[in-house]
Length: 319
Image 1 (cartoon, rainbow, N blue to C red):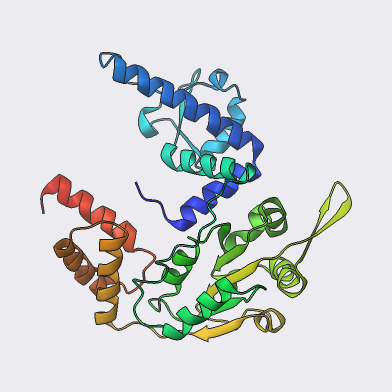
Image 2: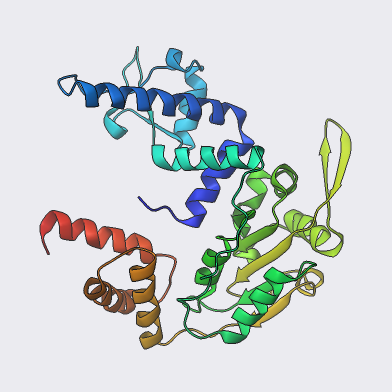
């Protein structure tokens, strides 16, 4: 199953910033792999109903909180159950957890892939000025920050999705940075590229942290009643529907480009290219899906979800 950039980064941040969640995820994944291997070897075994708290081990309250946080499922999801005396749990998205744990391990061991994808932006129609600016920014010796402003269906999400393929890049939503702490996140992973969607929804506290990073490369936080200050070199790529809520001081640190909404024909052409090159959809089916989607929405963010629903329906109902 394919996961969106936002889904990957949210899971990554949850596991990286919560030692309990990471421990539970690692142990739960190992248990699930063991149980699956048993049933491959002996198909006559009953379906596995999930692990209990003592298998990790972890307190039931911790596991219940992780279920609320959507790392785990219990009480019916993925064939788990819950009663007054016993509850079983499973990972909600085991393959996404596996992917993020492997990524964490690569970062900690200094083995994250370091090559820039040569086909970045290839399927995006037009916007040659922005493409040229982004490539110059990527190859610049010093950070060149870029802000994209425009309505939905103006290719902002597509550009951010491509930029998230850069090595040592990290993606976040402007409205979701405060919960995990932008300064903690920056100091923990020191991204070379920070990619922010909906930067106009970022809290003022986080805008202040981001401004310091962009102006001087300085990130500060309070830790154990002491002020911790570090310098890092990070390029920021951001997008917003409108830029009125962004601090003028921060906006001045960006090269800003205003994008226009795609026409229906352009949207169909781009959607078809995404489906064929990224989702490996049959070209004839890709044309059909792109045409249907253009009548409902011009936004790119929901494209993959629509594709999966369409393919599931076609496989199960034959229409």
